[in-house]
Image (cartoon, rainbow, N blue to C red; front, side):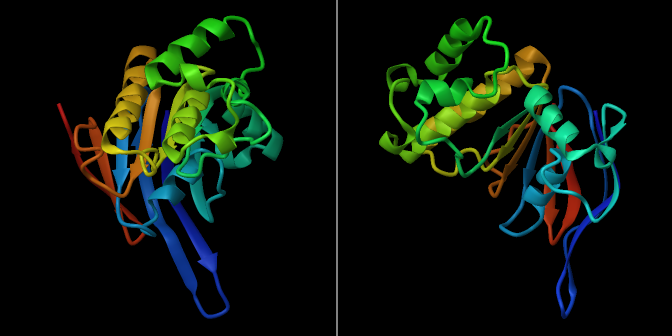
Length: 222
């Protein structure tokens, strides 16, 4: 599904070049469950952003289902993200003048079957009673669960999650991780999740460690 060849992200300053991500070769197959961990500033989010087309690599080749992503126009990248990718970020990026219900349904262009899908996801995340509220009326944990619901509503082929449990307590954090894993397992979608903690991704089938911009394969769980 994803194939990276000699991909790097370098920030040029007046004094030096800083490598957020050093030359990386990586393959991720369809349906894989990949956990990426490392300390703050290690380059793990840069890797996720490059694969999801939110950042352009300084060099190298990024392919998704055989298609070279860096060759796509900005509008084609946006359409790819809307149709095939789901995103959960540490910052929730909810729209304050829209209700919870409207925020969750935002990625859907086709509204057919939306009510049933909305009910399934909000029930799993415990959001049923919050649908008429606005984001400024929610706690951080509630906002994150709304962001997760929005990421899954359109049945994405790939779910990118960047520190999705950062603002959640242990119980709700575990619920979010299990929902993401369950969705991907049942649908055959690929899950790529970034965390500063190796414990959060301890039972992921495949784990990558990023340190000082270098990606290391940790191992594959049975």
